[in-house]
Length: 602
Ligand SMILES: *[C@@H]1O[C@H](CO)[C@@H](O)[C@H](O)[C@H]1NC(C)=O
Ligand SMILES: *[C@@H]1O[C@H](CO)[C@@H](O)[C@H](O)[C@H]1NC(C)=O
Ligand SMILES: *[C@@H]1O[C@H](CO)[C@@H](O)[C@H](O)[C@H]1NC(C)=O
Ligand SMILES: *[C@@H]1O[C@H](CO)[C@@H](O)[C@H](O)[C@H]1NC(C)=O
Image (cartoon, rainbow, N blue to C red; front, side):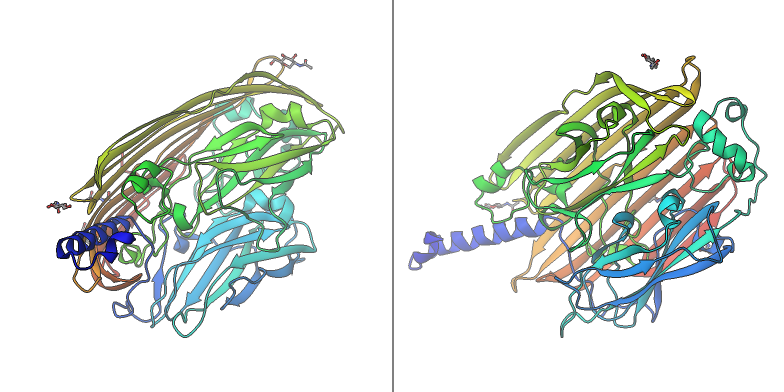
């Protein structure tokens, strides 16, 4: 910076100092990733958790459990992932009514949060992030229903891979000790007798009904967390993922970066759902608070966290966009204020959501027996995103080739409007985006003509305000999405009707104060919500998950030296059979209230 050379002009020096201070203020008032304080340790061997349903204490006893990973992730940075061979346990043969992946971690010392994933034969089973340990040690358990991967879990001699890049040296001492166990259930113990709703008796997938009549008891057992009666696991899962040398996720480092895989689809596929796994890191870890590049440039800021506050993940087949998603803004345990996430972590931090994109209407493009290119990209994405997908395919076992064709295809580009107004470091920025699409296609199967219509839409709104020379930053984001999948048979009778609604508003207000020694204080107020409702026939599942956090931290470099925080979380889950709610509050790493109930509040 040439201005700094005019040292004999006191005024200029002062102004430069001021400018430097302001620039620092701004870059520091952006949400960031920190190391939790050593001194503010909870008790020894403290348990961390993500509030979820079913609660860990409520898992019934499995028919058998099978340990599949037991490994310590120490200085694993730049190393290939950990790989072992998987085979299903002989004493617990398929078919299973339910399979749960139990992920257990212990860690002690000082460590950043890390991203991790587990893949079976290249298909992802779990995307997770770690909690930051304390010198006294912490542990946590994640349980995830992985029944939908049954076709993979039933096959022997497959590579099971886990990636968790960690740094262990004199400063960062935390080694992540991971144990992964699969819990197999041959019959799920039902607490409430299953009562099929009238619709389910009359209307069902004609192809699935054949296998259902072979194992009647299975289909009549309602499992918690399952997405509906028609949702039996896919026959085949094809990974849309990288080669595995650095984990199976594609690492996207720029918007134009391409993540794609060429695959061949069995010609008797009658249903296809792409399950997308996504996480954002580096300069996009807090993409929802990135200002536009014009602002960064005009103020001569050094931050590379730009491109504005809108990201859209999209999926292509042979270059044509066939699906899209706005990811839920998961906050990792070192993010914004690490004290917020002790001992309950942010929504999704231990079990990152995956996103289902129904590609059945596009089967007409890919059932020709030829290779097709499946791609994943991020609109405005900057370094870096970790992306991959599992393509779930249901096969018509009574025929070798089914015919399919798209009928209607209404898929306009996303309409995006951006506003910006700023003067110096203060200003206001807005992004509004929306899209509505409707796609219909039919598949002629051995059980007749099945026509699938997928209608979806979303509206997204992000507004950001910088005040007091950029030291007060307010981010408000709203996201609403709806999706309908309607499947009819050749006579026009309804087979499946699925409706999904999601909302995830987020609000972050950060106030930064600089101290003379270069350290600074961040005072943050955050509220974060995930609401989801699935309706499939008369099966209803609804989740309302809300977190509010307040607190401050004093930061030197990236280390928190002191701070205070409190988080309260209200979670509720209900479906046709269960009501569950849990309200938890923690202050400075300790639970101060924790009430849960299985009573339905009407
Ligand atoms: C299947 O049904 C659709 C209407 O839903 C129709 O357009 C199509 O021609 C039918 N396909 C066959 C092979 O009959
Ligand atoms: C912002 O910075 C200017 C100098 O560039 C100063 O005059 C003003 O008081 C500052 N405003 C606030 C709210 O700190
Ligand atoms: C949870 O519910 C309590 C009592 O109804 C309320 O005081 C609190 O603000 C709620 N917290 C969140 C995160 O919604
Ligand atoms: C449940 O909440 C009440 C206040 O609403 C509180 O007094 C009580 O201690 C809580 N119970 C537990 C186990 O935290």
